[in-house]
Image (cartoon, rainbow, N blue to C red):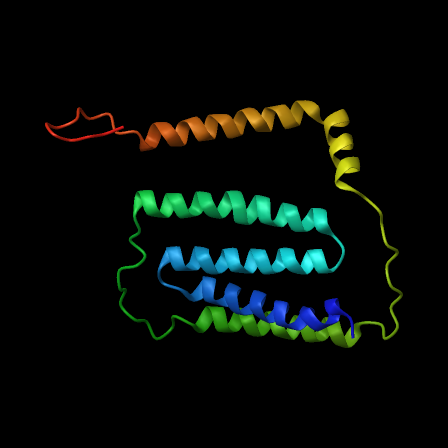
Length: 173
């Protein structure tokens, strides 16, 4: 049994449990933390499967950028979600029906799957080849995205800045 085979099921369990916890938590900050754990476990799984570029992108894009943005938005704007809501007897009805439908579809797909599917051929692509291709063929889009990121960063700094005059004895940067 190889290391990949040995670690696959524990990683899959971590991904499934942390994603389920992210969806079911009432506190948005806890949900974000569980989702980041799921993203990191997915990145480790990609690395074990021999796709280090996808693993790094999995950490940089969803876990690094999007989740940090969600966390700051939640913390800056506050959350009305964490206040208790009245319980409804039909609260879990629609999610239960959807989960059952997904499970039935999955079982139908597995029962119809061919027994001896041929494995896919390994594709060789490196980060250097991808970067060279993107910067040679799509450099205007890359530059446009970098400008959009800069504008988003400047806008976030502007939104956070406190323009009120400082009170006596208050020390602000």
